[in-house]
Length: 120
Image 1 (cartoon, rainbow, N blue to C red):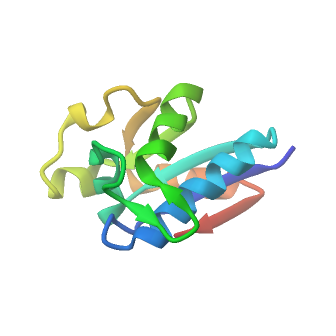
Image 2: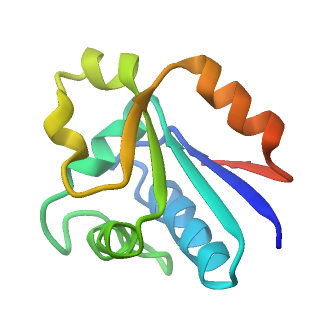
């Protein structure tokens, strides 16, 4: 079993990167690997996706479906507290997710503990 950190800093305007990061995380989880996701910068906007069809990548799926999978399986999300605050979000952004606001030191810690870090 491998341990992955998927760091997504691309927002909904970069649909392919955002959905690919989520798809890779879910694929690793389905294989039985340990997965942590860290959302930073415009990646924090991804949790604000409310409906199917809103953010769809080319061949990488629908972001809403990916987010639902994260919720249903309790996949751990870390969200940059500074990025979220700068973009006008509060604790309600995390509702329904196995998520917490984190600082850059958590990103460094997760990176050091992971076998592989992938950035999108």
